[in-house]
Length: 252
Ligand SMILES: Nc1ncnc2c1ncn2[C@@H]1O[C@H](COP(=O)(O)OP(=O)(O)OP(=O)(O)O)[C@@H](O)[C@H]1O
Image (cartoon, rainbow, N blue to C red):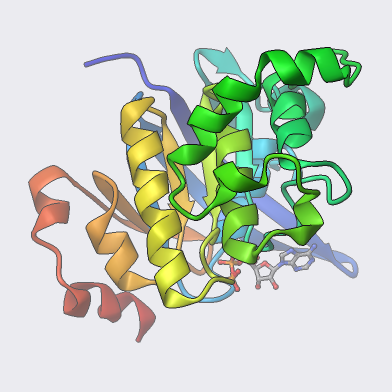
């Protein structure tokens, strides 16, 4: 078996409540192989975002160990982890700089972690590359390269956020309900784009969703969180055989 891309070993996350502390995640053990596309399900408050925050370093772990691409990142600073991890949020406004154009945002994303001056020369040189990149979105983003992102639709912005998150092939892609704010048609469009990019680039990806159909349809693995514990982990044929009714039991 290939070396794991992401591991969480006995991870606990707590939060202080007055004088005491409350467990948000308890004894999480998860090993994700390179190229795994894992859908993450769980009721409101189950700990899904906390899991992502523990991986990105936005929430410190009380105990346990997290490794990514062979590196122990348990105590690494969030800024360091951001070089390895890309995250797309539910809010289409979060992933892009609103006053900058689509092309400028893409240029910035392509230099993630490096110093950069936005010279128009750099932009011009990469226009055809950005055109080809945005053409895969099928929602007109390729016609909007020179528009500020605040003028885009939510679907176009989310498509742009996804392209920006993946253009440098992150060691880990975290999708945090990234289609939840979109209408059903646009949501399906963004999911198809997501699936195509993740497969094409063979990215390792965790995706939080409340849409059971999405969780069943996409990815090769599905995990369920309940009250801060990882209570189910399906993969391969076992995942393929799952039904909506099987998943509903976790929301009783
Ligand atoms: N800073 C904090 N202080 C106190 N409680 C917190 C804090 N952060 C999260 N929680 C609690 O931790 C639990 C897990 O929250 P989390 O946001 O991870 O759940 P979730 O599964 O992502 O939920 P949702 O589906 O609603 O987004 C919730 O009960 C939440 O209220």
